[in-house]
Image 1: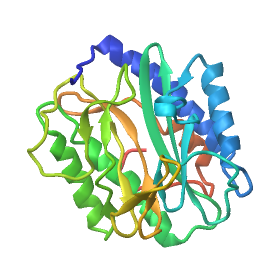
Image 2: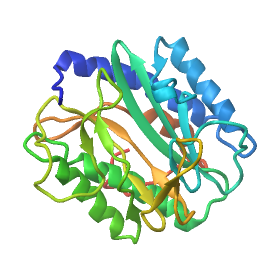
Image 3: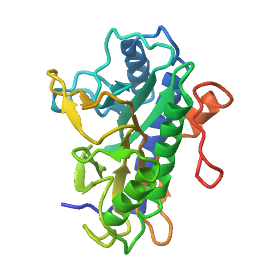
Length: 270
């Protein structure tokens, strides 16, 4: 079932999203070689709870942590633990917050220390593909318009789009209808209508699109072990122009003019 949210409900999601954006920034402050992924998870959970929210991911289908932390060739759903970030890594931080009865969901991928220019371009272009896709989240369009935009933008650089993992509706439940693939055909899929809330989240591989799941039942890696990047916003479908409910503002205040910064072209949103 697809839900259509009132302006009042959308505002509640925006409040949740502000806490989420600030939690991301608290994590971003600590990303450096030597810190463990478990330490980052603990910081996020403490901040979310101290600000009246609950971590959306913790306990969801028995997931054991508040963050999904995915390093290098891990696409998504990495479990925080003893791994220490290293110079040259990339690390995706995916987080959700439940506040006032509504979830918000967003992700951001960071370069750690000295990362090759080719991998930095993967991060920038994946972030750009997010904005290319979310521009299509407008009343009267189709879900396939979003996926087509992301896919065609990403594949022009020789990257590949993960097929098995998709974006989704979000609201009173963390995952709601409809599914929002990062690939597809224009004019196909469910019709987009004002008030739909979507988590749009390109997962773009440097190499081939194939993935494998680890024995822990959660961690998803690229089959060719090449890097993967992941960026995500929660978006409200509106007439003419989508409303982005989550924010990277707090992240980018922390990462500006540092090695953690992920640049985009001047045509893309911040």
